[in-house]
Image (cartoon, rainbow, N blue to C red):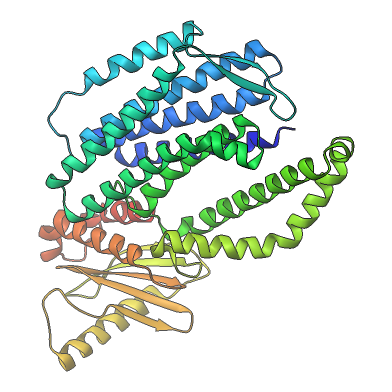
Length: 430
C-alpha cells in the first residue's frame, strides 16, 4: 500500500463534488461554467497523480502522468479565464489564452518533450524525469496564475465591497500555491520524503483551496445550509485520521524501516487502535476547525421541523411543509397564536410597516419569523439560529411577495390560487 496515494484520491473527490455543486447552482452564467471546468481540470490532475502512483508498470505510469499534466495545464488556463468572467464579464476576448495550453497539451500527450517516468527508489515507486523543455511547462503554470492574480487586482475597481474581499483572498491563495511549488524541492529534502509525495499533497492543496474560498468567502453567493454541517465535520475528521495515519507510517518507516517492512500488518493494527482512541478528540477538533473556517456554521446541530406561510391580514395558513415529524406543532394553534402575539406587540410598541415579531423560543424549540408585505414565514427548528438560515428565509419571502403580491393582496382563502408557493419554499430547503 502506498501511503502517499491518499491525498490525490481525496483531492479528486473534493474537486468533482465542488465542481458539480457549483455547476448545479450556477450553470446559467459563465463564471459557474468556467469554475466547473476549472474543478474538472483539478480532478484530472488529482486522479492522474493517484493512478500514476498506483500503476504497476512504467508505461501505464507514464500514461497517467501525462493525463495528470493535462489537468496541470488546464487549471491555470481556466483560472485565468475565470478572472475575466467573475463576478461579471469584462467584455474582453479570452479565447486566445487557450492557444498556448492546447499546444502544451499536444506536446505533453504525444511526446516526452517535457518529462518521462522511471522507477524510483525505496518508497518512491515512480518518479518524474524532467525533459529538456520541462521549464516551459512550469513557466506557463506560474505565468498564467500570476496573470490571473494581476487581472483580479486590476478588476477590483469595478467590484462591490464583498466581491473585492473575495478577489483579494482568492489572489492570496493563488500566490501561496506558487510559493509552495517553488519550495517543494527544499521541503522534500528537509523532511526526507519521496519527491512525488509533495506533488500528491499539492493536488489536494489545490482542490482544498478552491473548496475553502468558495465556502468561506461565498464566491458564488452559495451558502452552506445547516444540513451540511455534519458532512463537513465528518470530512474534516476523516482528513485528520488520514493525516495521522500518514504521519505514523512515515515515522515508522523512518525509525524502524526493516522491522516495519516485515511486520506491516501489526503496524496497521496498532495505528487503527491509536486512531480509535483519538477519534473523539479529532472529531471535536474538526468541529472547532469547521466553525472557525466558516463562522456562519457555529451552531448546534439544527433540525428544521416545519415551515408555515401565514397570510398577514387574515391569519390563514397559505402553505405548510412538514419536514421532521419529531418537531411538530398544531398548524391552527401556530397561526392563531402568532396572529394574536403580533397584534399584541404591535399595539403595545407601535406598528411599523413590514416589521413584526422575529423569534420565539420555548425550551429547545424555536420559531424564526420573517415578515413580508402580504404574508410572514415561520420556521420551527431546534438548535441555534444562524445568519445564513435567516437570509434564506428572507430571500424566499421576498420572492413570494414579488411573484404573488397581486393574488395575496386580495386573497379570498382559495389555496389553488397560491399552489405555486409550496415549490418556492421547497427550493429554499434544498
